Image 1: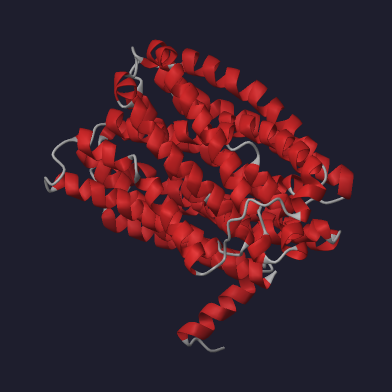
Image 2 (image 1 turned 90 degrees about the horizontal axis):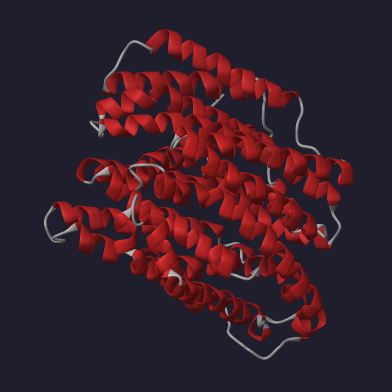
Length: 499
């Protein structure tokens, strides 16, 4: 667990630093661009995500599940896993993009009225999607090599640095128009994908061979069957996650403006999710190995500790943002249209707390022999989420998809929690779960009572500091996590605090 804890902490630190850069990017963008232009930029990610999850043909699952077998039975130079993953995965992505060209007329009919700029820059989504897909496939392989820190740096720091650089160049007049900005932005993911590939090649951690290995020949049937089933489920699961922006752009009057507002709330929500990325990146490899060795005790420990650690982070960060949201928008002079994003943050923030509080449930099921369950739950989630997003967006506007996601993802996580409990007797909750939620709620009321009527930068700092001190002290005194004490001890040692 110490390896997972160390990599999770480092990766989460990079993720939060990346979020600081992302916040700077969002702040600059919100000051210099319109909500509709911000909405267009975020649609690049939403549509590219759908292209990737439709086109990867289950190659990430293939890597997660079968990497330990390739590592155990083959020398690195004889492993054909990465070569076939890239050929099959990127081949599928290219086919999806070809389909996107063929069916452009449908896109014009659906988005031309509410979101005309999306149609105007439609073809520039494809280089963004290509780089996005290449990076995520390489990232999946790098996680198995225990390179989660490197991937977190590239995706959370370097990518956002590139985006900020483009915004600054626009502000100082080097980039003469938003048209030039968006066309250069389309290649940002390709930059970090090539950086990741270059580092892995230079360090001789990847090799390309298309000669089918004995592992590929032996497990070929299982690979095709499992990758295909999980791909179908995860494709629908991720479609359900990104459908909101597409629905808003198509049916809500104002189109890209409300995509921008919705995505700001969603982006701020992703700050809550930061530790989850680090935990997943660090836990995938050990979970795959534990299933191979049938080490159920280790899986249960990872499950429990990931749950309480992520709940502590998510509940705390949710309250910290909620008590500062309105003050931050007004104090930082962000366009007041973005105040409406607070409603989105509320519903999606609660969804993230529920999702993270259930630990690495998805990764445990995805690396187990019950991968078929991944498919069926993904299908069920999409079957409910997509129509609910559409219906609520049509009836109550841009806030509708956030309400729909909270409802459907809560049911989804509940079903998967019940599944693990019934199959393996594993469940991550105990009295610490309740104490964490009560602590977050109690400190919220204290801060709200003390500072609700005050605004300004100084009050932002004081309000945040008060919450962090009270919440952090409560976590330590109540001993809510087995991982907090060792980390706190290390921090005290590094800064020279003695008992």
